[in-house]
Image 1: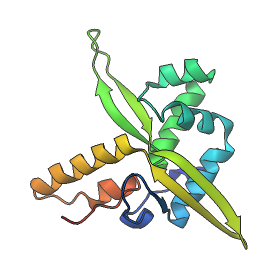
Image 2: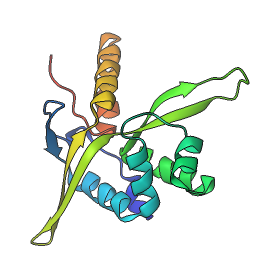
Image 3: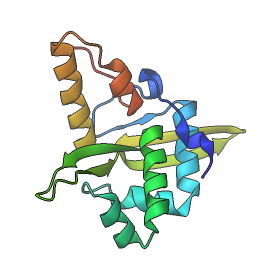
Image 4: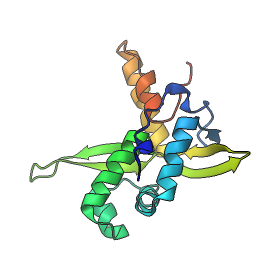
Length: 158
């Protein structure tokens, strides 16, 4: 996987659409998604975490991926906005760990006349969490748009 995954997303990475629909993504996000889809481990990681949040260990065991590769790919995928940290877990042992979830439930990539594009459908569970975060930050007087935009969902006006 290359450095193209480390793209920082902006709030205009997606056009705001209902959760059941998809959106044409920005060129930067399209490039990051193409890099992820072209890497076998990244593809398997993303597919594994669409339906449910999973730890790095769960994903690696389920997909037969070495843990060191899994940690690196997941870090890159989170940085690109293709995955999110769904929640942090602190077991009785006290060693906390993250559960990760794919940001998208579907991604279609295309190359037409030399132009790369991507159409993505946001994972509804992730979209709901991001919307709740946006409202919480807005209620505290902060600006959530950089956070929401980083994960590929533009805030909807209220």
